[in-house]
Amino acid sequence: MTQVYFGLNPMWVSTCVLAVTYALIMSEKINRAIIALVGAGVMVIVGVLDQEEAFKGIDWNTIGLLTGMMILVSISRRSGMFQYLAVWSAQVAKARPAGILFILQITTAVVSAFLDNVTTVLLIVPVTLAICKTLKVPAYPYLFAEIIASNIGGTATLIGDPPNILIGSQAGLSFNEFVYHLTPIIIIVMLVQALIVHLVWGKDLKAAHDAEERVMALRAADSIEDRRLLKQSLTVLGLVIVAFVLARPLHLEPATIAMFGAAILMLLDNWAHHAEKASHNIHETFGDVEWITIFFFIGLFVVVHGVDVGGLLQLLAKELVAATGGNLAIAGYSILWASAFLSAIVDNIPFVATMIPLIKSMAPAYGGPDQIEPLWWCLSLGACLGGNGTLIGASANLTVAGIGERNDVPFRFVTYTLYALPMMIVSVALCHVYVWWRYF
Image (tube, rainbow, N blue to C red; front, top):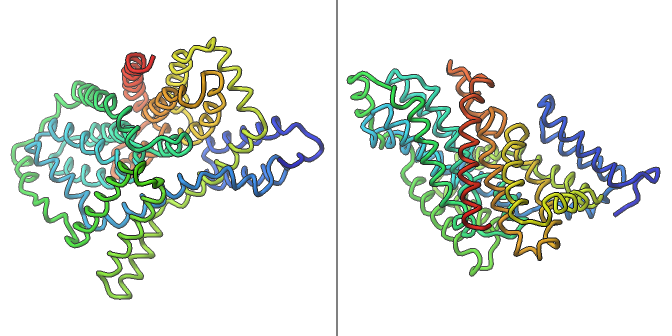
């Protein structure tokens, strides 16, 4: 660690930088990637970190995994597979509004387990709006339910939600471990939430018979725009998932798997076209990568690493251990509920990025890294599900709200919260029972 200017205490300097960074991110007046990068620069400029130490704080495994999956999704969606899935879902439900509401929730949750939540809703919501328009039913219940389902489904796997990617990479947890520990409770939570949505809206949704017939007359196969690309995408995505499952015996990190899969699919996509079209596709693919998210992560890693090096997180860890009386179960419940409510009002990505080194610092007090594994599951469940609590709790929420507003489906903060916050509390309460039964 370098010398902080004017002999200031590095812990207080780094804490101030973190606080100002968070405040500006929450204000949403400046793009969050810019804020995070400026905060990272300040950490180095004032001397909390030098450049070499700052780069050590960046988790390149997380960056590679996110980038690779974004590229895979960008290419795959050009085939039309996701539009096909939405139309197919509506027809499985026989075009009955309540059935479609249930099936689209389950579809959204399953897709979100393997793609990031924002991409999932961007793919499914436009088709949902078209189906609602055809059936002449209100779109709000469907869009609301898809927000809830995307955040729930994303909690089930390592790659489903950015907080899980962070936790998995920095805590050394595999794809299989996330599925083994989180998917069982996520299935229960999803079914309970779907039941609540049905009782609130689904049971009263009705459509005219001729409108249902129009939906049933749609040909899902017409959604497929490129059959060759569809086959290639399904093959590569399938192999990537298999590689995630076998990552430990293969001695491969998630970033390597995702980036190599992305490279292979880009290669196959380019081979299939002439030079001009191939060049257009590759520019479109890289243009689809959420570079704002990538650079937000990079800047945030450096800011949080500065706070870690400054000593604040070790101090907080000691205080948290003391407050819980050294009881792992109480620590787990505290992390679960605190993560849920805080993630409902602040972005869960910076929150989780700050909590990870804090939880790591608690390991010696509880007997080592292996003993604190339940705390990681509590953090994941709280942070991911807590994002459902308010309209600003997760990026997918704001994305759907924006699409809804552009299509005359208003989303109001208070209205959304009145429905969503009680549902979030129910889901976290189910998780509380689950972690008590399974770990404590």
